[in-house]
Image (tube, rainbow, N blue to C red; front, side, top):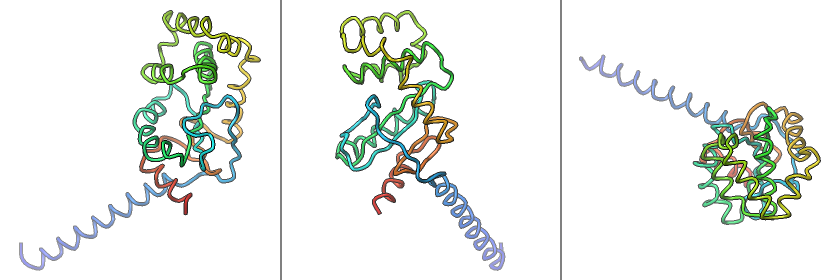
Length: 211
């Protein structure tokens, strides 16, 4: 390769690298852009809250245990949010459970989750549903549900006396009213972010809020 061709090759390589950087940077920036502002979402009595309820900032997430990306968020991203923000009382995560298909077994499982969170220990049930949501269709889960309600009168009352799953229906109606179409969907500082977000993406969103 003569000197002239070598220079042309180097210039072409540099231009290609710059083009790749621009494309990737644009993709990442776009993925972090909110699709809607002024989304009014508030914390309700039966929302599941991870962190201090009085934290300065809330991240609302509409989620389903059936959703693979939701499970990935809780397994991979949430621990980093907890370590870097939630444990420092900077933010809290407000979980709004939904069941778009109104699958009876899953609706009952979500009602149990809400009841246990309010009146018992939610973490183990949460881990179980994250591990494999299909357990809700088993006899073993029905036995577990009976154990929860039999051993705690408050859980039992809330599980059965739920006004036809009023809270879950309200969550889903919020989901529809916000024009959301899939899970997970986030509302942060009245801005909507659809789809899975990595820790780095959420970190950037939080950083922009602080500025």
